Image 1 (cartoon, one colour):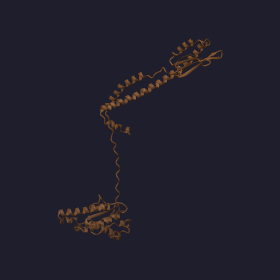
Image 2: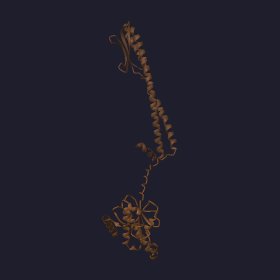
Image 3: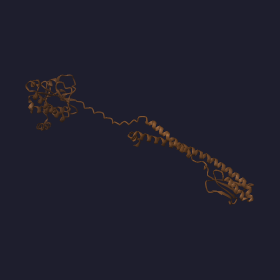
Image 4: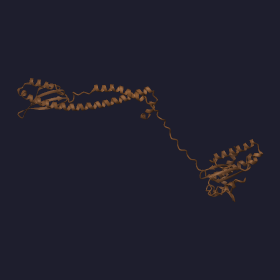
Length: 352
């Protein structure tokens, strides 16, 4: 999480502070790299020195065993002590011990309890006359190159500062905000049935009524249509020609359109706008064949007209009472169970 928020954190810092942090990060990377490289070099040098020290210790033990034979036979402990002290000057040797065949120390110098041991027998005519033991710490003469590390760290300071200064001259790009993708708009359901209204005597009313009365009549009709749109989930049709239109979608679109048309007829008759003659018809949005029956449905001020194609609609079966004519069908109402609900709804709307 910190790595993902790092660009945003750096973008909020002043330029000088950002350069200082960058220089510190570069110096730290260089310091780790130099430490790792020198550590690897130190390990190789120490391993090589340890092999050389072991080989030198074995050769020294063999040499001391050869030189100690006569002195052991003669019992010359002082000579053996002096010879052992000479071997103690070797870099890795820490202690020398010369013993007789009974493991009694004849000469012993240095620390005989530290590090590794290398032994060589003292042989006299195929008989063991004693032994020589050298204690050593292989590779102790090789130390870590601290001076090289310090020099590298000091040299890394100006390098990191120059790199940070050069990087600071480039414009810092602030991270672009992540804009969530907008969900695709849900398409509106397709309109299958339309309720069309046509004012048959609008021109005549325009000659009889004043402009204010005519506007009031149109406003009342618009309010009723908006109310019915909310009740029956309808939407205005954009391409309804010289008449008004409400579109309905869904499996019961025809039934909702019929109920909406019946309520509109009743509301118009019970209001002061009874002088407005409306032709109201329920028509499918896409007739099966090209005909002009829809025009005939809106030509006379009759009741709610129904297109012949909708007589077979499943949503109207056993719900609507109508009688057929040569131009289509006229809806007289709903079956009693539904008509009772529609009358109750009409009373509620009339009281509002």
